[in-house]
Length: 142
Image 1 (cartoon, rainbow, N blue to C red):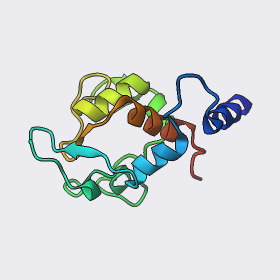
Image 2 (image 1 turned 45 degrees about the vertical axis):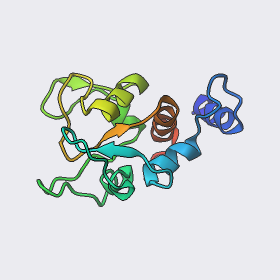
Image 3 (image 1 turned 180 degrees about the horizontal axis):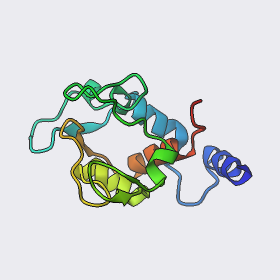
Image 4 (image 1 turned 90 degrees about the vertical axis):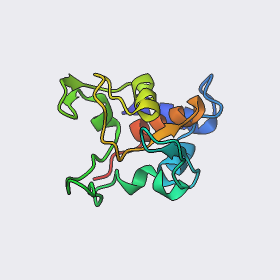
């Protein structure tokens, strides 16, 4: 816990080397849609409007998948980094590179496609690192 707090403090102050454009705040802004993300439906060429690509639209406790009625997962560090079965595939977990691959391709760590409703994002490395940092370093909601 102390190491995590120190990492968050150093990151917030911009003192971790190589992470100048990565921040928890920027990650939260991307998650909430305050900084829009470009994305489209897998297999389509047209970009979605920014309000349709906000992570928070689907990945919060009140959200439900419109087609199945099932809740979309509430994504946080615990959900991302612990090995679990997802999308009918074998157990897997994410690291930052696999998370970014998912956002860009719609393919999870064991090459299972996620729901087609999830956009495929045109997300750069700094944006993805900030989103990963926000999701994995934030204090989990009780």
